[in-house]
Image (cartoon, rainbow, N blue to C red; front, side, top):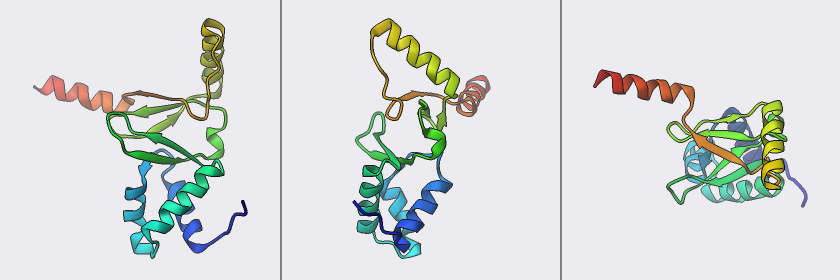
Length: 138
């Protein structure tokens, strides 16, 4: 499939590159890009093409049916990801830690992790601290 460098595609890619630590729904992206003259159908069409090219990671948000997309920059290659269930930010796991965890799982369960698709969910440091402060104040 040939890639066309259209204004809509380039604007979408620029937006996604500015939000690499976030998983965003197609609706959120379309709402943000509406002012740039990009239609909702163009957003959906380009998201599907970028996902097929491996430029985006697609996942369903826990406790929801909403599908979110995240730009898969070169820093993503071969790494696992952590996703905060409070703020939605996604973090790359260090390559050495990723390799250690993948090796442990492979050895213990004879199971190979799909590093591109694997996301571990929990609370980031900022959200954990904020939650702890909220409990202390009560």
